[in-house]
Image (cartoon, rainbow, N blue to C red; front, side):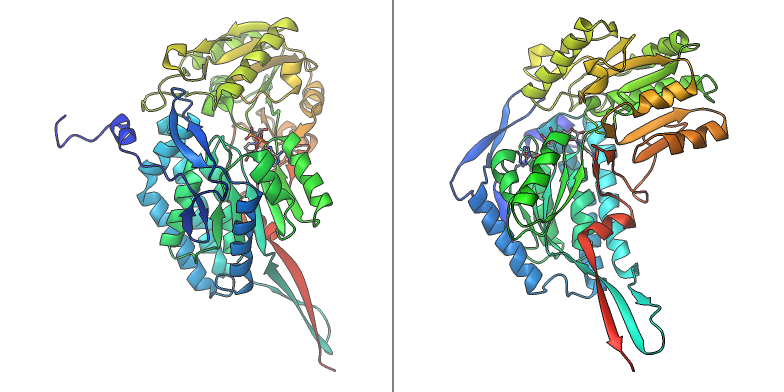
Length: 498
Ligand code: NAD
């Protein structure tokens, strides 16, 4: 190779070092049991490294470190300006190490390197920057108490925050929670998903390099049943912030009720409707976004627009456009910067998605595109982008979250029917409507029970708007200044002046 040539992602991947121990009290340590688990790359099914398998004993150590640093005030009592510079420095270090973070994400969970490098990592950096900048701009309140008293309404950090996250956007889901939790002065114990622990471990190292006191951010890789449950049931964790499936979200409610009544915030699953009305301002763009809204990140997106609701008068024409745009989405080597889709996160998820495709066919939906495993010769877990037509909203593929590249088309004959079908789900995470009519758009925004409603776009928004669900998509909001509320509580101080 020419010594001056820019190394390819493959070359960089070959030289990558993995942090594979737990990060507790400011240092990398083995699990107390000495156990390790295989960290498998979905790209080729090969073991990348073996990672410390934490359980209740390690969680105890991590919570003790977090508790100690919270009580001694080493972080929460630091001047807001000083905390701001630590988080700003962390964002800067993440930016400087963006290639390495992106590679870890791609190898660990199978997403295309161009998405990891252009979406996951920059948005994670921006999130940390945003909460860093917010730290010294928030004020407490003085109450209208009259002349004989002065009342102060103060916001205080909660203490030790447990964070349990999934594998689809490993770093981004983690920082959506860690950044506001740290910004408000809490200490954190993070459990990444067992499928994708690598970026979280690097992040913890960078945080200490940025000046975060040792013990304020701890990372315990491990399985849900053991490490996750131990955090959920821990008597000294004050709040649990979770992103993952609705099923596991319900476990955390139970863990809380059966332990110390810790607060719980849940970002769970979705089955989001993407509604195309005949007066959509740009049908071609709508088709392009309908495709991107389901095939981006291999469909492993909680807000994936997995139910495509199209007015019957334009359905056939619209599906032609969808098929045309779908041609640019193809599973490829995640390390190839031209790949638009990567691999499903693991063999289990691969199997699960294929079984949903089989159910769709068995229940009578018409397969228009894809439907099969791909790139099997690589040993990785790839699936073709898949499109079903003639789906009824009662079919399994319209009711259950598939979390894969499977789009179900449902037709409707009136706007009211579209809203009714949109709401006929246990979920309420997101929805989109395409229309030129402002009153229809506003009616949709009101009528659809979802945490985000997008008009004439899909997946719009940035760090300044809250994100979260209605119904069984959970409760509590990530992003925006509102996220800081859930990591704090109000304290009222009444001063008698009489
Ligand atoms: P999951 O619920 O299986 O796992 C999420 C996390 O919970 C992992 O860290 C896992 O180890 C842990 N966990 C699993 N079982 C546990 C148990 N019994 N006790 C304690 N912890 C346990 O979800 P997943 O398969 O990793 O991710 C996919 C799900 O995440 C989808 O349902 C998706 O919609 C959801 N998700 C939601 C959002 C959102 O913001 N609403 C974002 C991304 C993903």
